[in-house]
Length: 453
Image (cartoon, rainbow, N blue to C red):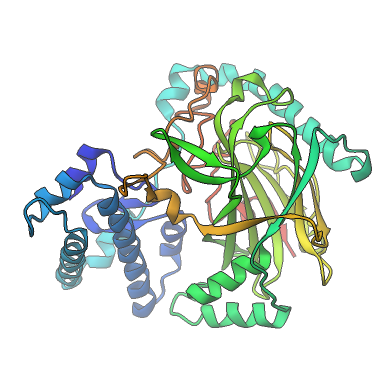
């Protein structure tokens, strides 16, 4: 199956195969978690988690393989691809391989150092691009962009200029929870050997709906209308008649303890308009907004990144921050605004500018009665998106890049070491700093950037 997936370019790149263990895949959180395994139950759950990630990825890859590839793997009925039977066979092989390997006395000793995720930066590109010499002009441009963004956050809300008109979007499905219910869900979800919040599907649905944001969008053209991802003439497109936010859960550490994160991904048809730099213009644009919850189920951090990995910023809860840490050979963490309190009856809101799709403000807002609505959809749909004919295909290539979203940037800023810089990227592939190295899904990003009280 691995050979066929590679031949067809159908590999799902959201997680990383573990060398020597073809039935396991990992991510940066699971790689970091290996250092905390203290007993047999925690090690067992760690391994089963990676096995499940592999099965999830393989199920998507089977769905995305063309018929002839599936038939060549399991010709149960001549001319009819039996994807279900193929997955069942893969699942059986996975179980047998794990059972066989677990019988070896040095299984964990061999496995643990191999659960490692390569970073998104290329040493070769930085060498060819004379990175040390390019750092100065890129640093100047980064500082200028940060100053411009900071000016939006320091300006009074009523003084922010409006481009086009403001359109407000609220979640179509309302979920009502109180602090005690959120805390109960988190406490129940942590009752496992690893002590990691792992909500079931119902709990996930409630949390995602409860924390879903309000979007206040400057709308000056069709490129400002968020929408549902679909295939359009063989290309990834946006259906603005069906506004959609895609979500997924992730995990990180707060003061060394595992915490839960809810990610909301917004997509637009393009980055365009007069306010955005011309080298960033191109097909498809997007934002990922991440809400991180502490042990009590309260948001202690919201951080945001464009779906290319650019313009990352933090908005932590002020009373929990003792110090913003300096990072050697990198810009300090960008904190243009503290996390606003959200009183009862209001919802967390973001205001997004036109064309460039940068966030100008985070604030609390009561849902307007005349607001447009958006639906919430699993991020998994992007990785098995149906064509009109019924077959599915991931919008991401085998390197985690959204197909057809190349930018001029990659010819100008390649010396920063990020392949296909400026392109929209899949979860797990967001390099967020041009100077130095940092990743959006680094589970220790918060602890490396702040000292928490």
